[in-house]
Image 1 (cartoon, rainbow, N blue to C red):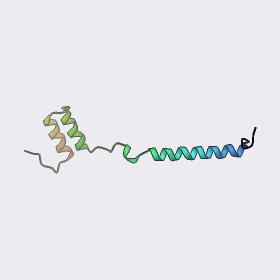
Image 2 (spheres, rainbow, N blue to C red):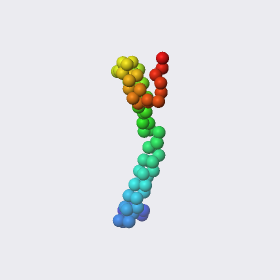
Image 3 (cartoon, rainbow, N blue to C red):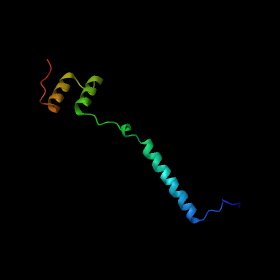
Image 4 (cartoon, one colour):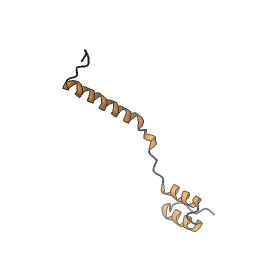
Length: 75
């Protein structure tokens, strides 16, 4: 082969190291910390279920009292 195309075992190792380093950098760049969904609070989940019609108003009020006993019910 021509000059510059002779690659011994050490050359293959360094090429592998650079490929791994490149993949790690791409992984760090592409994984955005805000891409993970934030953990919803229990009251937010409860409000969402009530808004979807999955639970009745009575069930919503009862669950809200259990989850947040310090708040007084709205009248």
